[in-house]
Length: 468
Image (cartoon, rainbow, N blue to C red):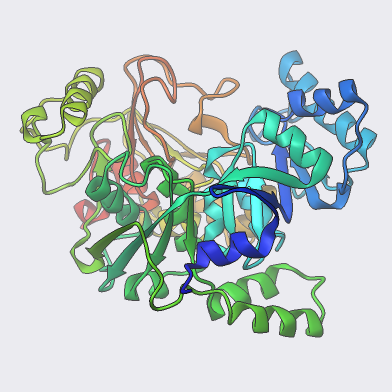
């Protein structure tokens, strides 16, 4: 019987079939942070259970860690320090050697660190207590987020009781224009299918445009797909995926590489495979996008007007639009272009990789942030920060008036003192624009790194073409 790539990966990792819709799934690698793992480790201690496979886990401090560039130590508040120390002590107790603490030169955002360390490979099952684990589908792996009780189960057994998902194929043909980015593309996808458009499904991205994307751009695509309710997002691995792993997994032998190359030839959806849902999109029609509401699917191009709630047939979407406009203090029928902003944030597991910083720096070079705008850039890892500094990107950002920060989740979810005050409007490269996500009463607009940089220079929401 013809199978999808998703089905092939699940089948190859099924330890036991529990019922027609549930399996016991073997998980290749799990990574944890200081924010969602403490209760899981505490459960093991209480039940006097060991971690079955310590080498199959990586733990990193990323959520609660401050990102200030000039501080005597990375973590300076008591509560956050306790969380970091608790994770370190749990790793030592259970023999987990891969711990990237606050002062580790490899510290960074978990979804960035995993790939840059070459730990995610095509065909793997990758899990974490964070919804944006879908990011790792860009390599051709099945990645998804889990809850605390499931983390405990993974630590103890390296398996997960897994309910099968439905399938969805999104075919993106054409090619992105020079003015559009992968972030614009995925915002266009979310708008097309809605915040519930992939609910309970694993999405496979195919088509000419997807094949053209770099691995980092595919990460952006897979990262944000969870905002449509998806349980996973995946791109069939190709030569780009293999080269990424070979470049980052320094310990792979020649025979390892040959075996991986042979295995990747099996990782594709059969031509006659059935998908529960099919959607298509033309990448060449995608323009720079910006969110106007409080859900990532509430997005428009800069040449479009903010939609009226009455334009939505779905009563849930209509009500959501009404509430979003009220919260964001915007009016239907207006153009969002030139809406004044007070803050710009470039970072998060969506857009903090070296290519993202390079894209923003190209826009900022020789320019300066507008008066009244505070701008911050937070590299996805300390390794990326060092790479950016070697290229002189830090100087470009600093000369432009940006704060050059250390790595961490930071303003993506308003941790530590990286919080916006009520009423502050922010152009952000993050993945969620929910009410209060970056601070109670603040206004978040999701954009690409290029749009964020251009908006910082102009002092209002606009695409990079505005600078021309």
